[in-house]
Image 1 (cartoon, rainbow, N blue to C red):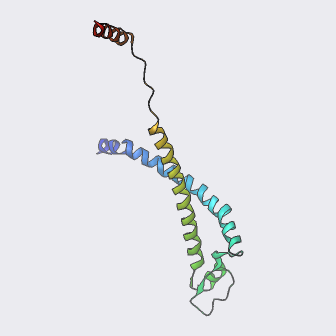
Image 2: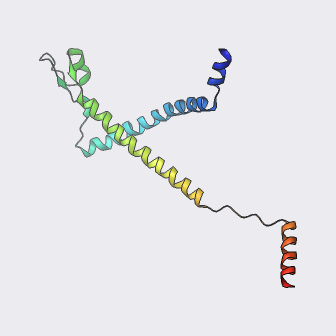
Image 3: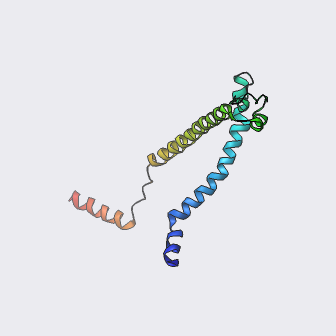
Length: 138
């Protein structure tokens, strides 16, 4: 059983997937920072300084706090502002990833379109070509 597990765990696809997950987690933090620290302030400024994260609907009359964190302490709330923020984040991330993948595909297409340089013929081929041409002239 141990040998079978080693074969499975050390397959190329499993190792590639593990590396992809680790890089994806690190890249996720970068993207989260780009969205949260760069794009969301711009979106908030465009929409008049709105901060969606504190939008909520209280299910209890006892909830009268102005912020979501305090409101959650007072009772049940529907935090639709947090949901809207996550939807906006997802949309921005999806658009950025779309542009990255599109750029990568464009680069791949340019690489595929480049013709491979033709190697010069070997001395033997040149000699045989000269012999053929000389025989054709006779």
